[in-house]
Image (cartoon, rainbow, N blue to C red; front, side, top):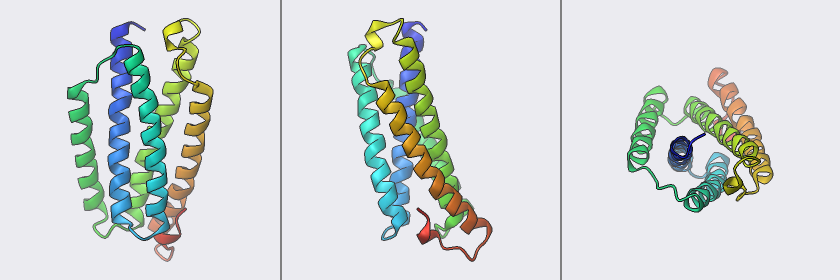
Length: 168
């Protein structure tokens, strides 16, 4: 991986984190007063902390943030939020299901980031900056918790008698 490719890869993941954080803010607002909002707030804090770790690594490697990628991530999230609102205008179980699935996929991508950086740190001492094992475990825990919410929301979305407020 060249420095250019590493910079691109890290910037892509930084932009992905921004997208996830924005989606979680929308979930917190849309499901205010429910366990879903509390869950989204908690996950938001964890993903924000993970993003700080990534940004620290980028600073350590002297990799600048890409304004284009940040703007693209912001726009992509706005389009995703619009799609979610059109699919489920009442902020019901289907919106939660789709949002949780998107966040879950992002968390899996983040885990894969930590895995490849851990592996490459054996060959690139400059990457030996973060505790990748801890970050991998945290991503796995986040994904497990989001998956529980996603499955409960899917059950509620596809079997309407279920309650979205119980998702968690």
